[in-house]
Image (tube, rainbow, N blue to C red; front, side, top):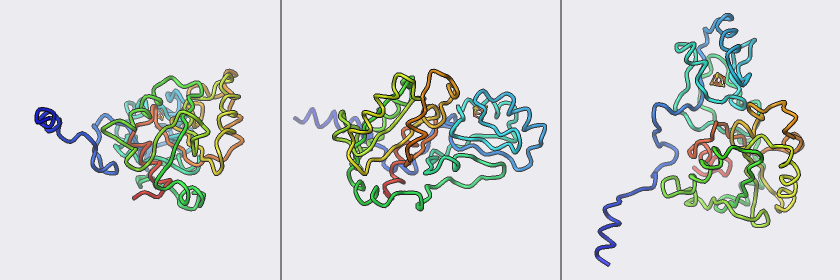
Length: 251
Ligand code: SF4
């Protein structure tokens, strides 16, 4: 027994104490910032090289719902576009994911868009069913990591469950391939009200690189109210956990 205690002590503390303030590596690309003095020719340059069409050719804003966080725009214009370490990038409305030039403020979930029943019923215990709808397993792996010993989102009563009948909501990853359109509907129908919908990652939010492809079917996304958009390519566990904490009103 003493030996086991020694082994446990040698492991030290593994969990992240404060998930709101955990520093991440310099390489991490979170909320982008665009200099207010970016010129029309510079906007034209970066919007032309962006592989995802995430940069507005008229005003230079970056749509995090489309962005692949590839950093190509920043490589081209280091002093005009950069990605911060800020992982609190979730939003309750799609248009809030668009970052305008000169906007360096933090992104915070607008309380006005959160359904009252969500906080009333799920603060303290939220069970989620994850559906990979044509996903590439990257965001899925990060969501899986959200429950590991480091991130441990189970400390807030948040966890993934195997059956939609045991779930309070659905987390969708992937651009929603045509083959997954019907299973996604079936899964959603099996969840009791007031069910929530979370889109995790660029592919789920906009279709990503697959946007406009005949191989995807976005009708589910287009026809339902989305409670939470969490950008990332893939989504970082801290972005996911902080987004869900904001949705539930966890300080
Ligand atoms: S980081 Fe985003 S906005 Fe910049 S080039 Fe890549 S996809 Fe486009």
